[in-house]
Structures are given as C-alpha cells and as structure tokens.
Image (cartoon, rainbow, N blue to C red):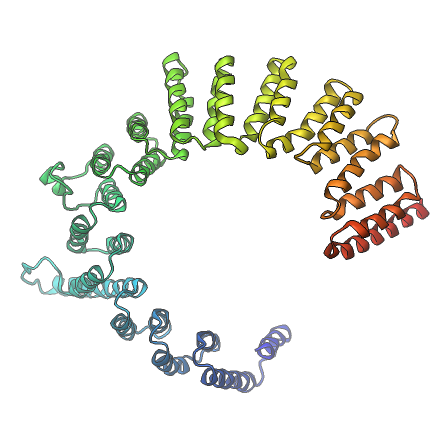
Length: 541
C-alpha cells in the first residue's frame, strides 16, 4: 500500500501516465490477494474485512466487495454492524435499494432488537415510498383515480409494519422518539406519526421525554392526537395561526406533564424548552419571559430546580429593574436555593455577593459562616472572597480572617498560608513575616507553595540575608525532599546564584541519598544539564 501511494505521488509530481493500468492494477491485485489470505487465516477478526472493503472502494474494485460481503455475513451474522455495512455498501456504492433493504431485513431476523438496523430500514423504506409517491402523483395527473378510503397510502404500509415490529421488540422511549423525528421529515406520513404518538401516550405516559416530545410538536404546530382530557378534543384540528397559540399549547402540555411527573428531569425539559423559546426571536418577549419565570418558580417551589437553572433565574432577576420588591425576591430565592442545594459553591457565592452589594454586612458574615460549615473543604473561593471584601471595607479585621482560615479544613489552610505571608510583608514588614513563617512552616498542613513564596520574598529584599533565605529551601527538602526533584534543584540554583559555590555538591549528595530510588536518575540528569548550562553562561559572560 505504501508502494502504491508512492507511485501515485511520483505520477502526480512528474505527470507520468504510461503503463498506469498495468502497474497499479498489478500492485492492487497483490494487496487484494494479501487481504484475502489474511481474512482466510483470521476470519474472526472483523478489522480485516472492513479494511478490505475500504481498500476495494479506494481502488474501485466494487465487484470484489459484493462477493466478500456474503462470506462476511456467513461468519459474522451475529454482529448487527456487519448487516449495516453490507446494506450501506449496496445503497451507496451499487445504488441498489432492494439489496440494501434485503440485508437490513435479514439482519433484523437475527437481531430483532437492533436499533441501528430498524432506523436504517425505516429510512430506506421511507425513501422508497417517497419515490413511489412521486411516480403515483405523476400518473394521477394523467389519469385521475378514485380516492382510497384507507388512510395509509399503499407505499407506506411496509413502513407501518416495520414500525409496529420495532415498537413491539424495543421498549425504549428515546428510540421511538428518534423514529418519530425521522418520519416527521417525510410527506404524507401524518397517519404514521399519529400512530407513533398514540403508542407513546399509551406506553410511556410516565416518561418525561414523551411529554417533552409532545410539547415541542405543539410548538411547531404539528397535528397530533390529544394527550389527556384536560386538552380539548378538537385540539388536533386547530389551526395554529400565531406564535402565541403555539407557545400556549406547548406550555399547556408541559403544565399537564409536571402535574403528573413531579421530577427534576421533567421540570428541566420544561424550563430548557422555554429558555430556547426566549432565545429564538424577539417576538412576544414579555409573554415568553413571564412563562419562563412561572415555570422556574413552580420548579423552585417543588424543590426540583437544578443548579444551572437557579443561576439562570438569578441572572434573569438581576437584569430586571432593581426595586426593593425585586431585591427582596432575589434574596429569598438565594436563601432557599442554598437550602435546597447546600453543596453548590456557585449559589453560596452569588448569595454572599448579593448581601455584600446590598450592604448587609452582619448578615453576610452570618451567611459566610453557615456556607463554610456546609461546604467544608470546598469553601476556599468563599474564604478568598471574604478576605478581599474585609480588606476593602475593614482592613483591621483582615488578620482575624486569615487566622480563622488557618483553623479551617486542611486544604484551605494549605492554600491560605502563602497568601497570608505575602499579606504580612506588604501590610507589616519582613521581620513579622519571618516570625509567622517559622510557625506556619513547622505546623501541618505542610505547603510547598508557602516555602516557594517565602523564598521569593527573601530574594526580593534589598539585602539578601543568606541564613533567612536558606530556611525556606531547607524546609522544602525536609518536608518534600523524598518525592520532589525540583526542591533540590531550586536549592542548588539558589546557592550557585546567591550563596556558597561549594554547597551545591553537598546538596547533590544529600539529594541522591534522600530521593526515592525511581527519582534519583532523573535528578542526576537534570542537575548535570543545569550545571553545564550554568558554567557555559558564566564562561561566556
């Protein structure tokens, strides 16, 4: 195959056309024989069969494939995919709908619950029915025929039979909805659509997806059987003259649905549809928004509203005109939302921001304490926000917040330590930072970021104190030296750039003894590379 590809490239490059059929045909024939040999020896390996079919398609040896498909299906008839491959080949390459359908129907005989085979068979039957329908229309133009009392056109009867078999064998609402969507794309299929819908109502009345499908069909103005007695009997003959009518009908179905199925999934379908309606066009904005807010409020009251829809609702309320009533409503919703979904960091965050923006300082402090207790180790973003707020409003209380954070969960204390040290240097002095660092460095949870930050701070001083500057590096290797190569390399770099030129050798020896055996080789190679680069730069300068 590489040889064949190379010949093609050479021909294209030098515009050579001589002996093309002789050379390429000989090589392609050799490849085909190799494939046949491989398939004969490894018949269970489906990859050889598929690769062979692809190759024959590329070199246009279609006749070889038709013969090989029969052999493949004899051996791999237990795989629905093989029947699908055979049908697609007949349809796409040989343009033979009859053979393609025959393969699919044979496949369904062996695999009566195969969704992919049913889907392709129904599509193929519908395509065939549409072409027959066009031919029939042309004939009727010439010789008008007496109308048939049977609602099902003869060309669609096979599709009806296939659907009935599929519905009987496969109990999956998603599959039935998929068939309905496919059928909906074809003309003169109203009778079949109504049959599918009636079956869905009868079999899947407790499935949220069924109600969602029905509601969306109302939105599109598609005719369908009524769902319940609550929907008037003449609904299926209504003319949908306006967008408002269709939205109302859609909303009516969802309202019926959420009364029957009071689940988070059902409310999510409802709200998602209304969000899409609000985003589709600029027509009827107030009407659409009112329906959406009502649905959100209903889901909230039923305690079935997902976090992402709470966030959407809060954003919606936030964009409205800010009056006292709206602010109170938003505050109430946020309070309830954090009770219903207590582990949502986003909802607690927005609630605290709202209280801060409303200048409710005492309440925000109370809610912050409640949030950190509830969220535990997930509350780091709230601690950071609290620090920023207190720093802006009440700088005297910042240190108290830092100390409280250091007493919180281990991962929060670990993240806060380097921020605290940096704040001490900026707000007080290096001496205070050094004193606190010694205490923080020795007490768990140990933080490599703390040592790194302190080392950076020491190197930023006008006069570097070597004893103080070495301490963060010593603490790093003491706490992380067994599992981290970089702490040793950073210490060596510090000594070579700022400290004692004789120390790197001693640090190197300590590292080799301390590091885990699987890390030693990596450290030695990185050290050698750094050392070579360092001396190279020194010599050049």
